[in-house]
Length: 618
View (cartoon, helix red, strand yellow):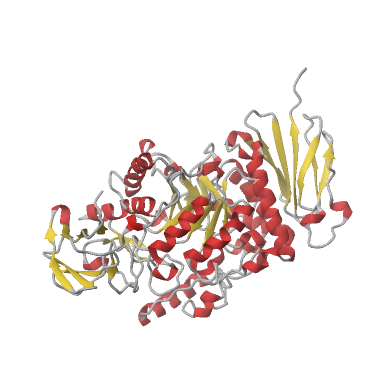
């Protein structure tokens, strides 16, 4: 592994390394505490290196390629003064970890919770999250997924405009703040995932071009110049990004990484950047003796993403399952057809449960072509399912959450649909108690032309959906502060009920062997016209069955229970009084016990679970 940036070895010595293959010279400029300039030595493969023996932690420095302007280190571990300021030396060994016995959690057991550090608390810091961890543990959350925390311009941003992939955002608390959060999470049995971006580098503070050919005009990225993973001089770029996961796993004890939009990473080489990362991470996993997970966001609908490199795949452990979200959302909220015009039939949701990808070679009008490949048979723990994530909320004009788009009963049904699936569930912060705060898109750039370009781009993006309203000004600080959670509401009225509903579903998922069986062979779906469906989950031995009865309509729906059991026992009913903000009608309650063959009348917008065992012959 080539150690880039400033590697502090303790008690003074520090090795500075930077990749600049087309530069003739490189100067290390120390600016604090004493200003000095030190010539660096060109070594193999286009790297420059120098060891300085009297460096202290927090020493500030720049690099000067070919004696040009001083630039921050592209592999900086900390930018205390922002993206344009000097880089700082970090002594990673100085942090006192307390998680020596932490070995991670099985991926299949995770309940993921995506959060944005800046808006999760009023303070918007890593350390401010720690006091709220116990509430998340009480709910059943055992994995945080942090939206990107690499250094970006200004004090607030979604994080996808990061320009220092090895650095930790200064306004969030820097390296020590992130380490304190991870250490506190591990002490409570919570894994920590981090969202990373390898498909582009943000605009402001992007000094990569001053050093070398990090970018290529061979491909086009929606967000900026495409990174050079397969062109001239690509080895240095590949090393830079392939070693980045190791940095997070080793220095910050991160448990898993979620890679943003891998379909926008272009690499035609014989060994893809993903295969390279997979092998490096698996090697480190053996060294550390704990699980290290790689999760992809992919718009490919291809199982190649989660196949091992030996089978021609990219080597990810799991991927987000957008098709499940789209199929469910449009059935819950018909207005969703405006965004997902190819979805809207109950059969598609059934396929999302039994197969995964809904589009597995069918024609998609949105794409004007046939799309996707089959994922039938792929175990449930290779996919992540959700009702909300940062994109689903933030890319609406009003930043509305699902709880603001559908009724209370519909919200319960949607929640159950995710947690009763065989997939690893993900919640977006505040979703667990139906927080009604918007989550807008916000940035904090300082360059005027860039500000105008971002505003124009957001307007054009929303115009695609035919929305006439103006999106909030992403540069207005009120857009950012208005996106902060209202945590105090989680114990009030309907918010407390939906919080308890999540807690119950998570508890069932953790304690019932039927819901722990992730084999697709143990899942069947019966479609009830376009009004609802019955999800049949069964235990590994096939003896115990859960029949999850869903009505996704405004009218009652009838269903005759199977006859191959002595009786069916109800274990959950969304119409029970304690799940209602107001007193429900008695005729909406299903019987506690149902007889074989009994016809049940499912109330509008409801979900219930009945369990039964197959009758064994005497």
